[in-house]
Each structure stands twice: as structure tokens, then as C-alpha cells.
Amino acid sequence: MDKKTTMENYVRTAFEKGAFNGVWLFAENGEIVSKGAIGWRDAEDRLPLREDSIFDVASISKQFTAAALMLLRREGLLELDDEITRFYPEIPYKGVTIRQLLLHTSGLPDYMNWVEKVAKEEKRIPGNEIILRFLCESGEKALFMPGERWAYCNTGYCLLALIVEKLSGLPFDDFMQNSVFAAAGMHNTRILHRRKDRLTVDNLAYGLVVEGGRYLLPEDSIERTNAVELDGGSGDGNVHTNIFDLLTWDCVLREETLLTKEEQMLMYTPGRLNNGEIAGTEKEKDGYGLGWGILKDPELGLVVDHIAGWAGYIAWYERFVDVNKVLIYLCSREPADTRAYAAFRIGMEAIVRDEEPRPVLGLEELTVQDSNHSNWEELCGSYEWKDEQIELYLQDGELYLRFRGAWGIGASSRLYPLGEKRFGVKEYSGDFVFGENCLCFLGVTGKKL
Image (cartoon, one colour):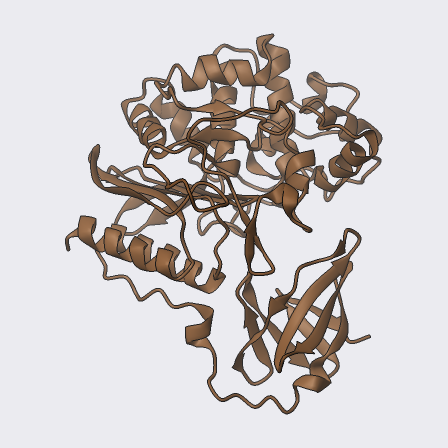
């Protein structure tokens, strides 16, 4: 297979079907096989993306935070099984360790809704120090006892950033810049709080959300404005970089110039719950390590990765440790069609594995043609769903839905028939399935009101 041509053609098809607007890079044995940029980096479609464009890589940031903890551990400033109250005795969540923060087994509650609410009330974008206030003042209960379960937790990584600050004596962002990014030769990488600090970034790919069939900056949307209020956080996100620096990071890890093999293998080892079960199999096939998802491929050996998504950005970083491959793609627009994006992601994985990718099919191509619309009016109305409502209504002979919750009414989405009382929408990958006076979405069933 000519991977270069196959990947380029596949990306182009995905772009044409609204599945991908971004940059990609695939390398084997340190040599770039395929790379490129397709689409736009602004909301007006005037500025083409460049291969070196800067992206917010969201939760891929977590592996860099984990690397910082490894460096402090090497200096003897901490042990992974140190409890967080060693560093912040005032935190009321007892028994939580640094290792559990890294593994997402701490049970700490999620900070986002509380911090967003406080930011709006105080009319400011708080810095990462708000996490300590959240833990001490919110009164929210732990989700579970430390080590009992695995639940993805951004709060834990923000707290890790505060611990790095306390132990290093430097602001977290400065420590990362000096001891991780510059030390690794990643000269285009830094932690940025663009909205909080009112920064303009040259060659930035602006992340756009899709809402009501239009692309918008998060601050102009109805549903996604928390990207503004939460812009001051560190540790769990806000690293900005490009594909070439991420390739450099892969090389630095292979050459062991920043982290030793022993430190890396510690990061690539799945954690264990209190009962001995592997932690993180809910997210990754073979568990979650210290800032990395883990897969043991029968043919390709150890594979470590992380997916990321935040306010218009999607990022994927996958390292094939044993066979020296790396796949990177960074997207600066939410997919206009999530089904097409899901097919694109699977297809890119197939190409890396020397397999022919399946076609990128969007929702309209999967729609049942000449479907019976006679019962659609019966489906209309409001349905309970978690702490929100889903409203169904007809417009110009088509079926639409919108979410109504604490933050108001969301944008409308058209439903496409996929089978008997089964529908899809372009903005969400899950199916909406109707039963007797009920609606099921993402495994949650709500009654019709």
C-alpha cells in the first residue's frame, strides 16, 4: 500500500464530507510518510490551514502534566503514593494519592459546572488556583472512595498542576515551558490562556463549534460558552502545539532524553483498582496509565494514545512504541457529521495497520430512503433525559430535536431515520431510539412528559 497517497486521498474525502478540517502527520522509524493540512483556520474561511498551524490539543496535555510529575519524582520531591493532603492539608477529600489523580481513580468531583457558575457570578475568568477553592468550598461529595472505580477526572490533573507549582516554586505554566517543552526542543509549544490573558496567537487554528448548521466561535454559541469561563485552567488542557512538535515529542521519548525508559514504562502500565482489576478499561481496551490510554496489539505490540476534544478542537495522538510509528491528527472544527468522522478515525487506523480503509460514509448516506413519516407527529413532545429535556417537533415535514436544560434551549438538530423508530443526528454519534412513550439516547431512557 502507498500509505502517503492513500492517506492523502482519504483525508480529502473526509474533508469533503464534513468529517475533518485540520492537519495530520504519520511517521515510521522517524521518517514522515504522510502529512498535510486541509481546510480553514478562521470562521470566515479566508485563512487556509498550514501544516505548522497551532492547535489547542486539550486532554493530550495530560501526558505532559504526567511527565512533569515524573521529573519531580526523579528529584525525590514526591512519591506517586503520596496523599494530596501532604501538599494541601486543607483539602477535605482524604486518602487520595498522586497516582490516583494520574490514573483517574481519585473519585474527585468534576469542577467544570461549579467553576463556570462562579466565573459568571464574579464576572471574571479565574486562574487554575480556583481548583483549590472548588475542592475546599463547593461541598460536592466524592464520586466514590479513592481507588474504588475509574472515572475520567479533569479536576485531578488541575490539582496536579498546583502540586507541581508548590514543589517546584514556579508557576505551573513556566515549569512546563522550561523543564518539559524547551527541554524537549518543542519550540512551538506552550500553555496558553487566550481568552483569560487576551492573547492573539499567530497562525492559530481557531476551534469552531457547529450549532444550528453553522460554525461559530464558542463565545458566540448558545451552548458552548464555558470555553470562556474555563480558559484559566492548567494541567488538564490548554497546551497549544503543532504536528511537528508532537513528532519531536515522540522522538524525545524514544531517545529517552527527557524521561528514562523506566519512567515511561511506569506511565504505560495500566493502573489497578482496590479490588485488583485494571483501571480504565471503560475508556481503553487494556486500561489507562499515567496520562496515556494503553493497548497491547497482538501484531504491533505496545500502543499508547490519547484522544482529546474541547470547544471546537479534536486531537488524536497515537504512539506505536514497539514498531516506531506515530499517528497525529488535529482538527479545528467539530465534525459537521459525526458518523463520517467516526468512519474517518477508523479508516486512518486501518491505513496505519496496512489495511484498506472503509469508505467515509455520512449520516445522509446511511439514512433509510422513502421512510414512513406517518407516525412522526406521535413522536413529537418533550422527554425527560438526565437533568435535561429533549424536545421533538416537526418543521417543513422533517423531524427536529433540541435540548432544554439549566443553561437554556440548545440549537436544533434534524433527525434522520435509520430504521424502525431509530434516528440519528449529525451533531451526535449515538442513535435516538423511541419506545412506548419513551426515548433512549446514549444508554439513558427518558419518559415522555
